[in-house]
Structures are given as C-alpha cells and as structure tokens.
Length: 205
Image 1 (cartoon, rainbow, N blue to C red):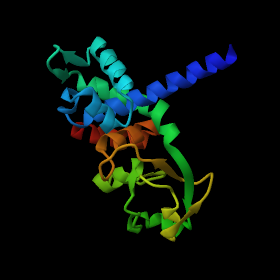
Image 2: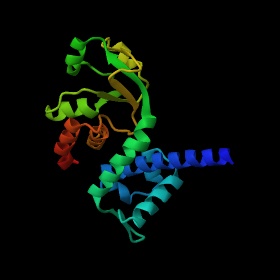
Image 3: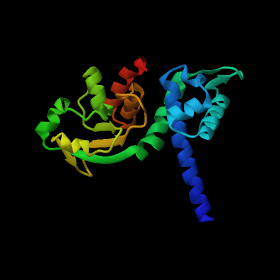
C-alpha cells in the first residue's frame, strides 16, 4: 500500500513537471498553442499523453479556447502567474545540478567578464543585471545544456555545496535564457530587490 502511494506521488510530480514544460512552450509564442499535440510534445520534451491532459485542463480552466478546429490562448498574464509558481515549486528544484563559488570576492565583483561555455547562459539575477543594470546580483543562476564541468575550465569558479552559484539543467532548446525564465527566477527568490526587478521586466513578457 505504501509503495502504491509513493508511486502515485511520483507520478503526480512527473505530471506537474511535464505540465510546467508544456505551459512554458505555449507561452513562448502565441502560435504554439495551435500546433498539433505531437509537435507540442516534441518541442516541450514530454509525452503525447501529458500534452493532451494539460491542454484539456487548460481548456477547462479557461486558458485555452478550442472550437475543434483551432486553439487560442487566453488570459495570458494569469497563465504566466500560474506558470511562475509551478516552475519555482515543481520544475526548477529538479533541474539543479550542482553549486559553485567564485575563487575570490574580486572575481565575484568582476563576474560580468567571465566567458561562460557556449552551452551555458546566465539566469536570474545576473541575467537581469545584464538586461537593465539595476540589480547587483547576490545569487548567480546558470543554465547549461551539458554538465557543470565547463565552469571549472573558466578558472574563476570551483564546486562548493554552499556556493552562491546555482547550476541548473537547461530545459528549453533555444540559445540564451528566455525572459520568462529570468522573470520566474527573480520571483522565486522572495527577495524584494528581485521582485522590483521582476516588475520592471514584466511588461516585456
């Protein structure tokens, strides 16, 4: 009985993770919602069943209008709010690969001069700092399509379980960090500085 309950919890968590990836894909381009279920599944990296279930749920909740021929996305800002919460609670924690720290405070102060490997990009506070220059990062998020070993090659960072650099697995296919991810990263910190920056970014979503 306990094993059945445990498996049910795992299945629910996997479904929540898949739903978060699907909604993210739909929010990237208004035309994405009109694509076939198989196209959405392939682009979002989830199963066809997960897409069908998520689209049905979003339709029932009024986020999608489906007349049987076309699908349209509605209440986009409300869906963004829903996604950012789900991302912080269900998807992002599962993406964490490792943590690093800068070699010294001097290196940390010059973080913008660090050339990340091609498979990596800044997220959260550093991405926002590069975008508008209004925030001084206290936490550094990095997304990678590979593993975290490339950071050691920069000669500026070393692994540290308590480090201020958080390395996450990239879950999207395009280069760079999508603005929606940066926005969600900022809100997930529950830091007033970051929330102020998120509000400045919000109109650009």
